[in-house]
Length: 270
Ligand code: SIN
Ligand code: MN
Image (cartoon, rainbow, N blue to C red; front, side, top):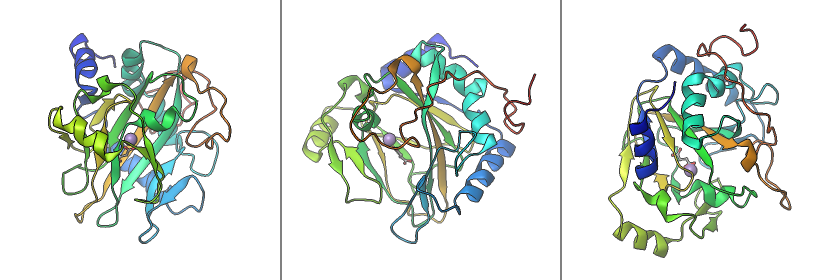
């Protein structure tokens, strides 16, 4: 699948583009059953909520090895319907997965993600420029009550803002936009938009778009997968004490397009 000129224009203007119904109900069930299986594994690739220890984020489901490996996720990141739009957005065929993160914002327990730009963290990883794009796959219906994402449209055009490290609000350390600067930006921006949608919907978004999400106040889970594509040419430079491979991948081999049949393990296609 490739994006139209209108879709690319929308991405450039707003910092995101919505692609409804990219995964079928059966595929979503398959992806979710993989995450349910992986969620019970004890590993540092899984960040858990402080309350109750349920999985908040599962990393590195997309590789062939490691504790969280899943052949279905490995196929999904290579599926032409994901890799094609990522290539169009970044204008490059040589892409690799910076990381694959699945946020299981569980009913009642699932906690907030403070307002931030993803590149606020990734530049500390040594990544030269914001030449990345993230494909968000909705695995449940995302609603305002269960903690859907919010975007400030067009905020990616502000460039990279000076972040501060918040290591107290949740179990996940995050480089966030300081409150005073955030409010100043919000006063001059369109209202944040709620990224609600159905299971199987996909949203590609820019690493500098300002985004965040609230606590899950509902009885419904809000699981989402995030496939972050980076240009091989934009791979991180050496930094002292780099973050682990599951968040800052060192597998820079360019992705070969796979099959859109994600149920069949990668490598078994002709
Ligand atoms: C993120 O911004 O990295 C995650 C936000 C969410 O899953 O709500
Ligand atoms: Mn983010």
